[in-house]
Length: 278
Length: 223
Image (tube, each protein chain N blue to C red):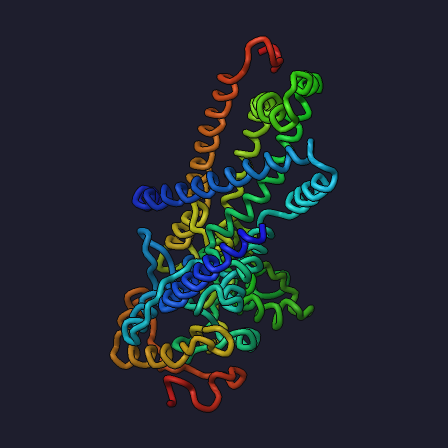
């Protein structure tokens, strides 16, 4: 037994070295995690990835000479996958929040969103009656809208609102149209997408959030991607390609100035920002 | 309009189904080989081996499939590099091995003890007697319960999307999110696709069972 092991050992070492070598060579291809059921930011049609975030990431990769492939994971899996290093970056309509800033590094924000209160088209509820006094409201679990509703309305007994979480907004809207919810709160571009695709819903009111959105990389940026992505975002913004991409998927949207507001709680927005200020 | 979308997206649903069936074949094969080994050891093995097999089987039967998937994708991949598909095959395959081991254990025990004694009396050693006498009879008898395992594992593949395997359920979600609705109709079509594969597989297994049956030897009801 021992002699067999001794004979095999050099072979095993060589095998390990070659596999390490090839793993090293493959490190050139970066994996961008997306939730591909999230139009207009990322979705799949005819077997191809499409959406604002997808096209913009492709443009940034081309601009910076990066080789990027997309990996689709459901929304609740995306941040854990980035934290664990299963993906190299997170490319989707990702809101910048203090909790997230603790576990990942944000690029400069390229978008800003408000939240919209959606009600069925034939509903007589207004923005007050849809949100209080016995109303039941739905939002995507783990989304910033859910957290905001929970912190500001559901936890306040005087408001008397019941909050329900859903895996995604499509099911929340379906539940509302089935009569089990009074309202659903989504971000502005999701709301506009629903209306553009003919769901019988309308906007009862807007919650002004000025919520910045950005891409994200692993905390501490071990692959030194922040500088490249930030520079890429600025380049496609200045060349006008960004506006073209956004209007391809959301013709009614106003282009925000990049970077949009950069909250003080994000440490990658302090001092010199790689790819932007230096 | 949704029907046009469904027809135009059918190739991608079919591709999703192919991924699901691929996953099913891999995990059932892993489960079959490992399950047979586990069952043999549980029935005929030394008590220490038996204990190890029982422990494995209890653990993998006692954890929900979705939790196993997440554990393998986020935990085991820290030590061994593997993709979503491999992680799904391992998580669901090891779980299937635990279930299949119980199917085979039952089948082994249903072979009358006299068979083993007769084989040993004719001078066969234990391994040979298991391989040539007990196993062929036991395998034949496990086909019936095994159809259950086939059905439930086919349906379990629909959970693999949580770790990024783009199978039939995920493809269906793509259509739903593209059109921002039509949940009922899309999942209705997907349900039909799963059902057809399930029926086809069970039909083939029942045919195999009938074909391998020895007339007048095994009693399988009066039908």
